[in-house]
Every structure is written in structure tokens, then in C-alpha cells.
Length: 423
Image 1 (cartoon, rainbow, N blue to C red):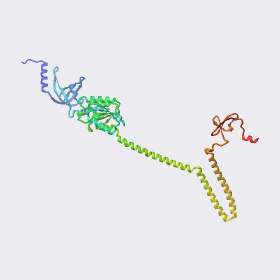
Image 2 (image 1 turned 30 degrees about the vertical axis):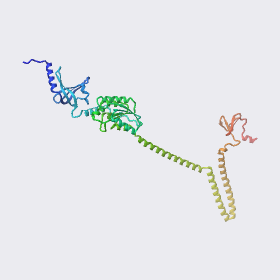
Image 3 (image 1 turned 60 degrees about the vertical axis):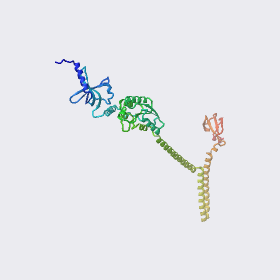
Image 4 (image 1 turned 180 degrees about the horizontal axis):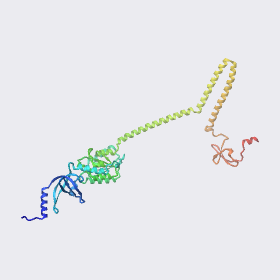
């Protein structure tokens, strides 16, 4: 009869057998009992319709995991069988995990995209507009890549007035996501007008740093308007959805951020032409107004009125003379009568017309500036107010004023004209 062996010995033999036999296995199953431990290790089980297998992925391998594990997820695991001898439990030690039927990167992209969309990271209400005329733009990209040279060329052509600040950043490989995040935070503290985050084209693995949640968080929390310019036109990354503006390429980001100086030159030329045309129209309109006013003043001048009245007088004279001649030829009696009538009428008309002319002439002379100052006439004022003579009292101090002189006197006597005529 064989001698019995200890439990430990048996577990060690089983461990040796399993670990040397199942060195590399590929297993497909559904995740359950998922636990993310504080140590960084991941514990879970995979199962099918009939069986369950315990699994563990240690911290050293989790950094290569591109997506978030979830209960109910169907995955394919590459690993090896290991036995925990003290308990006699065996489990699958996971080296690599891929989503079943789908690439890990594509699955991770959709997973993070859905997560951030649910958190409102893509909401248009939180996106900031770009300033129309930026003075300073900060670039978060590689200092050695071709993208920076392309952006400088486009900027010199479109708007050479802008100032660029480059934040040299690791844009691919291990640690790139963390470096991009830190550069975004530093660039946001520089108080620039626009921030461009991006790099040139590459494979999905090369661009993957811009699909990391840490980068998405930095973009979302930044106060500076951000343009995401990663890869080529066909490349869509998480940074594109979170940023305020998505550019197809780094060069396109400069085209979006900067105005076109040639368009503004054309616009300024059009403004000059429009200004000149408007000025010409205004001047022409004012010239027409002045011409109309001059013509109107000429029509209403004193000379014009005098000429008009003189013309009427001449017409009347001619008319009377014609009538008189006809009546003289017809009858001497009628001639005398007409002569008297004409004489009386004509004299009356002349007197009336002459009175009108004299009145116009008198008004004209009275209102002529040189006739304002008449000898013997003064203006009476008291306490700097113009006053009539009949409103004064004996003893009032008054001023007699002409345009050139002022005389001050005391009123000694006031008499009405009627009182003087009675004496």
C-alpha cells in the first residue's frame, strides 16, 4: 500500500502539472463577479452556460487594458492557469483581454464615448465660441512634428499678426495622455485667446492618447476655447467630441481660428468705396439744397418785389393809354370824361402804389443795420430791464442807451402830452 502524501504536497503537484500544461490558453466567456481591488488588481469570473472559471489580472497588466471591464461583457482572454496552493484553488491568470468579436481599441472608444456623452461632455451648451480676432494662441503639440510647421505656414498666410506659444508635449506612446493633460492645464493658465490641441496623422495606436479619459477631462475643465486637431480628416477621437471646435487637421485648425487678412483687405476697400460714394451723394444733395435756397431767396428779395410792382405799373400805364387813345378817337366828350376818369383813377392808383412802395422802402430802411441808430432816439432801461416812460416815477434812476453810449440820470419830472396841450 502506498504511503499517503500531505495536502500541501498534492496541491504543489497539481500546481506544477497545471501550470506546465496550460502555459498559454485562449478562453472566451462572460464576465461576472467583477471587482476592481484597491491594490490595482482585477478579480472576476468568466462563465458559459455550464461552468465558471475564476480569473485575476494583476496591476502590471492592467495598464495595457484599453477598455473598462463590466459584468455581462463577453471577452476573449489570453493567459495561463495558476494554482493558489494554500487553498487548492486554480484560476486563470490574464495577460491580455479583448472584447469578443470586436477590437479592444474600438470597443474602448465607444465605451468611453458613451460614458462622457452621458456626463454631458459633448453638450453644445457648454461649448465656447472662438474670438473673431485672436491675438495669442497656445499650441499643445509636439515641438518636433510636421504639424507645427504646417500651422505656422497657414498662420503667416492668413493672419501674421497673431502670436503663438508652443507647449512641447508628448503626443504618443506611454505617458502621452498624462503629458497632454498636464500641458492643457498649464496652457489654460496662460490666459490666451485660443488653445489648439493636436498632432499630425498616424495609426489609431499612435493617436490613442487623445482617446483617454484624462485628456477629455482636461479639455472639458479648461476655460480657454479649445480646437481639437488630431490626425487627418477621417480620424475622429474623443478629444474632437469634447473640444469646443473640431478641426480636420492641424492646418485646418489655424484656418478656423484665424481670419483671412486678404478678405479683410477686400472688405476695407469696399468700405472706402462705399464711404466715398456716400460722401459724394451727401455733397451733391447739399449743393442742390443750397441752390434751391438761393433761388428761393432771389425770388423773395426786395429788388424782385420792386421789379414786379414796377412791371404791373407799366402794364397798367400801357393799358390806360391804349383805352384812352381809343376813346379820344370815338368822341371828344368821352375823351374829356375818360381823361378825367383816367386822371383820377390813375392818380389814385399811383398814390396807392407809391404809398406801397414808400412803405416797403421805409420798412427796408428801418430794418437796415446802418439805420438802427437814429439821432434823438434812446432806449430807456431801469435795473437792466427795458421800460416805458409812462411806467417810471420821479426819482427813478434810469439809463438812456444808444448802440454806442449809455447815460445814467435821475428822473425829475414826468408829464403827459395831454397835460401839456391844455396849458
